[in-house]
Length: 397
Image (cartoon, rainbow, N blue to C red; front, side):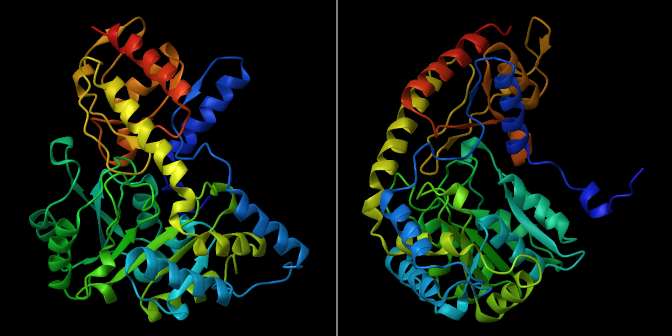
């Protein structure tokens, strides 16, 4: 038997990817599965971005690129940060990576030593927790509820901080809840961070443009925490570029240099053609992707309206991203056929079998009372899926 490392043995498989794989298996068997498990836009990459990639091929961008990304791309990212977020960065504060997931692990591996505590507000994106473990850190979870709109309070943050606390990582808007913090709420959290020496924040803002309440608020906008914040972003969600694999950070120079050093030893620079395509995305006015945001907004309203008609579900209204995260605890203890629902995971398996709809259990995101529904699908598909879910849930007693 091959002896794998403790590091990999202790990692959990991504629940979102696992459910997507299970959905594909069932589809291959001929079952009519509707998968609402993955966070992937159902749009194609806009043509102006594709044209930039084609030009890059013709211009022979086919050699090794700088580890931290092309200088002109990093300059464009600086302009984007200024235009969209009011943040001032210089190119030596920017590192371009192979997706925002790599951006995150770069920072965590550069900042966290074994035994350091990292605060992770729940619900959280599944990967945060596992990446902290990978670095030898200790995830410290702050639990929230649907009644608080899944937001942490300054008091909760204060109570979670110990002498071992090194960092907090969170997303805004949030995956999986769609929650978006207001400027006032972030400023109150920033005051706690500023009062805690040697404590940093990773602010994952990859869903910033998929926002239904106006301009997204960046954590680094507050001067007292600017030098303690690493802003993570990417092109996958807002620009429908999941397969291009480009993420980036804006960070204090010392942290950016460390991430470049680390990245240089295991992936080097991100693909050259993807970088040229990303430059076009960064320089585009956000109005160019408004049609996608408008579609997601309309879908959110549709899904929330339909879910509210299902007896037992508890719903809040997401302010961004393309997820809804209903509380399903009403169904715990209920049964139908061979299924008895004891957990959110039980419920997702029941819905997969009975409704042929794939969702992701909230347990993977740190909240065992909920499930995540992605509405990155057409209105027709969503109507069909929610109707199936309602019929299946109504059978439980």
